[in-house]
Amino acid sequence: MLNTVKEVRPVQIKRILFPTDFSEFACHALKYAISFAREYEAKLYIIHVVEEFANASYFDVLQVPLPPNLFSDIEERAKRQLTQLVASDQFKGVQVETAVMRGVPFVEIVEFAREKEIDLITIATHGRTGLKHAIFGGTADKVVRKAPCPVLSVKHPEHEFVMP
Image (tube, rainbow, N blue to C red; front, side, top):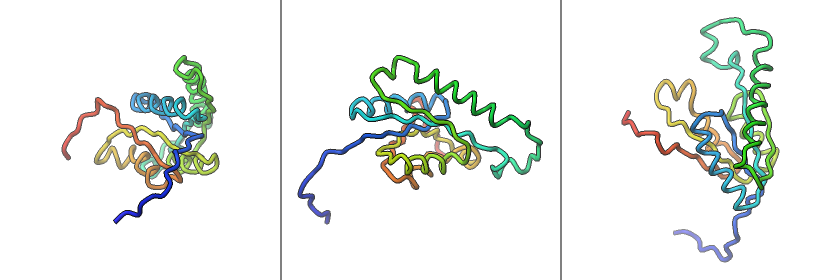
């Protein structure tokens, strides 16, 4: 039996984290992050994590030398994309801070949430299964399990269900 709650306090959301990979799935989930930021007058943090392929287990088998400036070039491109994104009209009236970092996406997202004392993470789920999920997916799943705060996992409405 559930304990009865004597006093129900309103939810306080002052800091929202939105990790993005710039995909159409992320663009859809962004609508939710912006909506919550407006509703709660919360600050919206938008981050992009550049995964270092050399550290990824699936990359070891390829053993291909990487160009020396690869990751810094990817980071610069991501910074430009974030700047263009937050310059759009959809962010009017929303306080936004952006960041680009390197590492394992779910680890960086969870650490950022801890450091900034995030109240809510809004993240897109790609709905991958099988080998694609093992190699590319699972970030949203891991964030849900490891995050220090509630996580809103947003599925793109046009993603069709395929029975495994």
